[in-house]
Amino acid sequence: MNFMASKQPENSLLGPEADSQRTLYPYVTGTSVVALKYKDGILMAADMGGSYGSTLRYKSVERMKPIGKHSLLGASGEISDFQEILRYLDELILYDNMWDDGNSLGPKEVHNYLTRVMYNRRNKFNPLWNSLVLGGVKNGQKYLGTVSMIGVNFEDNHVATGFGNHLARPILREEWHQNLSFEDGVRLLEKCMRVLLYRDRSAVNKLQIAKITEEGVTISQPYSLKTYWDFSAFANPAQGAVGSW
Image (tube, rainbow, N blue to C red; front, side, top):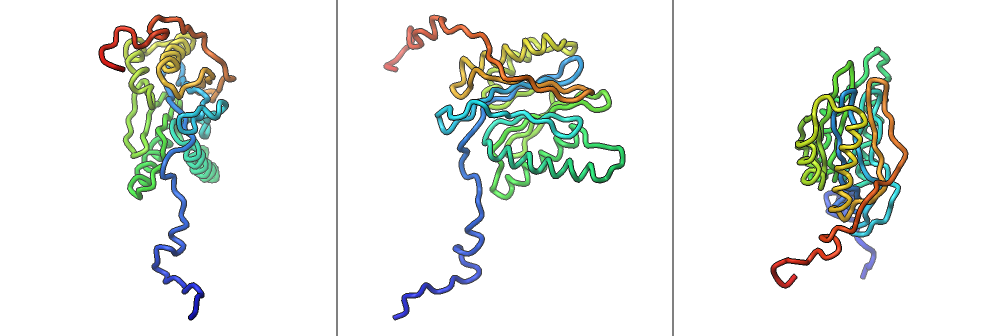
């Protein structure tokens, strides 16, 4: 009897197609990104935590990157998929620069490109597990938009991903205005990040704030917020609660 394994037919499920790798579940993830328009451009904030499941494994993960001359990208979700998106964008910007025609992609074009990428990958049942924030300034026009892992996208004066969409957006709706100065914009973002730090278990007290204007992108050095943990609700969260838990 021949015990040699027979060759699999070309259309077998064990063929080369079975070797394709996909992010079936997010492993190392980042939490909220919050961004807003201010008087001179766009401000964006994100902490530097990378969670391995429910464990805060990494605490120096940069989740905001400049894209070309006019754009700034922030990402929540799977870090490896964010790196894949950055690779796509590197190729896009390189191809654009090769034309050498004096034009360059603006934030609106980059945002539209990202919506197509995310929606295309969703339709292949192979999504990139990220929520993205794309802001920028070109020819004096400020642009800020977001796109989810299934391609849902919109443009607004302030946006947030993850828990920030639930906890930071109400603060921004209440306090944001069109003529926000740089200093007031930073204070508003810090207020949002402080609330997220108190309420989001995946957040860490190490963040960066980035700005983009006509002059380009500046990303701050990492720093920590002053916090206060002696609120009675923090000391005894179950006090006054109804029920066994």
